[in-house]
Image (cartoon, rainbow, N blue to C red; front, side, top):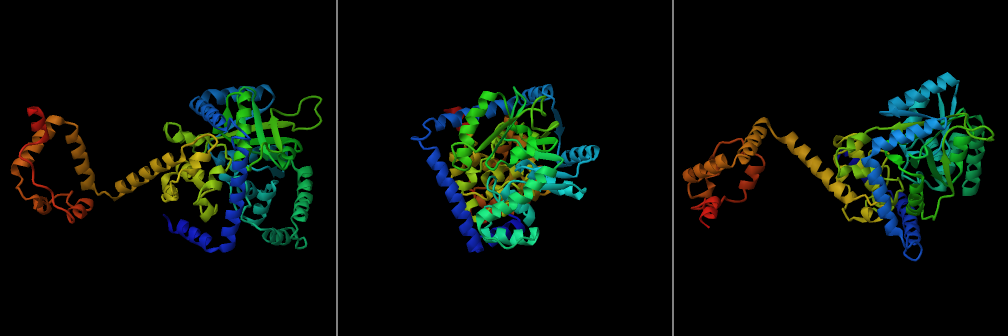
Length: 471
């Protein structure tokens, strides 16, 4: 665990008010989820989880096919699909488009995908104003902070914190009444919507057979973002694609229940192309940016690639005893909690924060609540193994690596192995302590520590192979 990771954890644990805010908010979301997935309310909940898992598994295993189908259907409806390797390519595309269209102001709806590539910062660095329109995201943008939670980004902020931020950044009177704070934000953001040149959204799902982008939200800001400006750009990870429009129903029954405990989110939008003739609203131009950013690195590993099934509901965060103590900003990247602990090392590399897969009690609660049945504890164990193997390899000196390669070669040649065993038994004295005095590259490090606490037993009169032949 890095010193920075460790320090953030200790600072969070020492903040009593922050501890209360995290525990109260996640507890409320957790209890609401339990109520809405109860057998008496949704008797087929477990069947829906199984269906969702099967759909995502099939989509990821046939990702190239469904991405191509999605692209064809988007373009058939007048839209354009842009493939981007990373955040640099995404920002380059948007900057070039903005320059060509003379755009200066961008409004954004909530999107974890754009958070992971630092899109706002990249655009603002080149003189474009990019404004978050989700209330929680807007508060954090004014505070220059990243999301604390996948679905409740400003979970850690009290109304007093928000009042101070609004007063400092918007030059308004200090207002602690939540409804009035919302009205202040709405007044500012409505002007942004009316003046915006480009609207950027994320996507909850990409429907291959219709070319539709599905966006789920509660505030209505995503609808304004995607319909008021003349240009709409949807940015989504390539893993968001699902085969059919019928599949959306399965996920909609799971997503809001897992995220906020609602039976269904307030707004569900299906967007497929620019405004058509006769329509009164909608963009003149429609683009879908499909982002890799490390996702294809997961595809070869059949076990770990189920991390790509995630629908970003945040249920694993709300039930995780570790997240509920150390909070979202203790984690080293934008994705926190159990899902962050498995996708961050895979997207960013295990060296980004080697201690991350170990920031778990392995209680299994995250796997129990995941609506698409990602086996998060199993993947955490595999990532821990990867970290330990990497550390062991780094610690081995050249002679140790040579010795292990020689041993591996010998173990794959049975006859030579048997001969070597016979020779060793013939020259070894009956006292097992003999090996301590043998000068060898193996008689150091772990082996030396092991021998310091025990003696090797004397060699038997007959080897196992000899006894096996006799029997």
